[in-house]
Image (cartoon, rainbow, N blue to C red; front, side, top):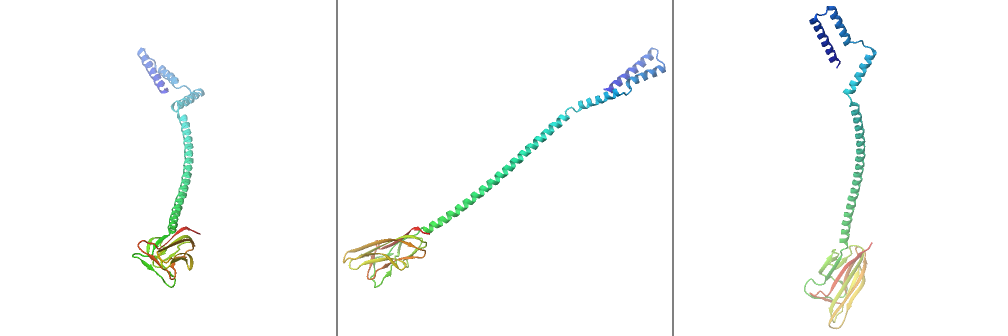
Length: 267
């Protein structure tokens, strides 16, 4: 703006000089005085007032040129503070989520362990149940019919026609049942015969006679049965023995039988 004012003043002086020359002119001294005068107008002495005005102009110019810098910096600083707070909150949230994930993993590990233990328990329970599945039933003859006996001494009967043998605790070759686990067992026997000779059998636990089934009459058929609950330890044996001088009869109708099963195990 000051440069434009200076140019305008110089042009005015130039026009004035030209006009004076056209009108009769000025002498050289007058022209010099005029130029000096104009120069003085253009470049007045630099007083304190002028310097103060120039400083004020520069401040105003700076304020006009950069009116929004401070406001923008303040806004930027506020934004940075806000973002730091958001980051701090996000960090806290992430930490909490990590802790939640850690707790969830711990819970899942516990559930997996419980499932594993439950599975093992189920396997053990199935195995235990299989061990408890003990039952058998058999008759004397696999085929045909006929008598067994009489003999002068007791003999162990072998019931060869096996109907059921869950757990394979009964041996049809020896006629002996062997207890696979400690428990309470139920046993039953039946003896069929014809008159004239007694039909008698006994249940033995190991070498001890426990119960018997006995029948005698001179003629017609003979039929007797009995049963007992025994407490057996692992390895105890149960068998059926024919009385001395007695006989029993069997046929396809399976009238003379030996049966047993586990009621419940014992500790």
